[in-house]
Length: 116
Image 1: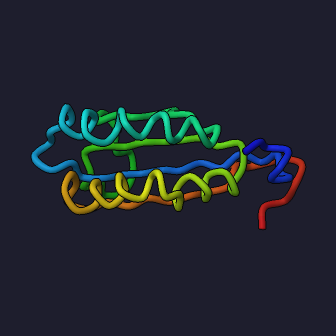
Image 2: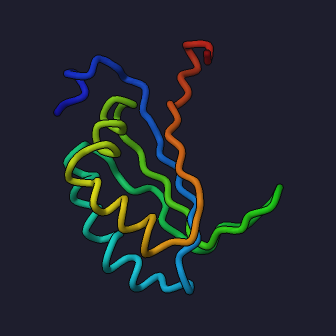
């Protein structure tokens, strides 16, 4: 799948803030993070952030892990997130490795186009 096939040039970002069970980052990365990276790459995504050191400057954060992925387009991001390849990892993360969190997909900002 190439970006020209999807017809957009605005990147999309997946932002995940999750609570890893027992703070076991090694298990999380071994059983989920590292196996998922090649699937992300297949959809032209890249990992920009994967960290337990987020500093809360506003609001209340009850999560211990933050991830930011970038994809060339929203369509590629959606294709990855809803793919058959990623589905078992997503389910495993949600049911076994984490105790909650939130995951959002957002379009990048193009200063030449008003948001809407």
